[in-house]
Amino acid sequence: MQGSSDALRKWARTLPYSRILYPDAAHDQVKYYTWLFLTPIHPYVRDTLDYLGVLERMYARFRPNGRQHFLLGTLAPSETHQSLALYLVEQGYANHFVALKDRGEIVSLRYTPSFKYQYHIRIFDDGEIRAHYEYTPECHPFWHDREVSFEPRREYFLELLGERIIPSSH
Image (cartoon, rainbow, N blue to C red; front, side, top):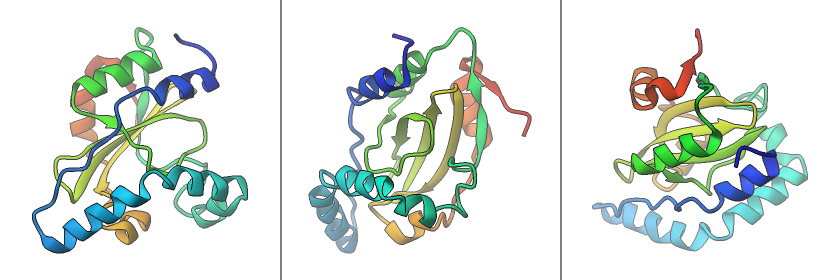
């Protein structure tokens, strides 16, 4: 189903939803339950703020071209948006509905090895792949929002994706 961006985005919504691991610390458990309540309404709030142009103004310094940092590469000719996303789901990644949307983003997937951190991969309509390691929004919403401990982890992602992508030169 390599097709239009809208069809791909619709297809991406069928991917499994990311579940955050239950934390040990009591203060993190409060955050966990707060996000259980907030997660279903987050996309509506995000999309409304995006429509009003609020998010673009707020995040211009983090996303000067409308996309987050850490370009990893582009889809290999043998891959499609769907095949790469399905491979990542097999590796434990899942759809990250809470994330902000970058310009041209088809799917946002994350893997959460703990309540505190996540590996985050975005696949774009032009075949570009961007990825990073960061705090989860559930554990540290402010630090996550301000990209504190925002790391490329390029070698990890290149090993994970192998020949499924053409690595960027930077």
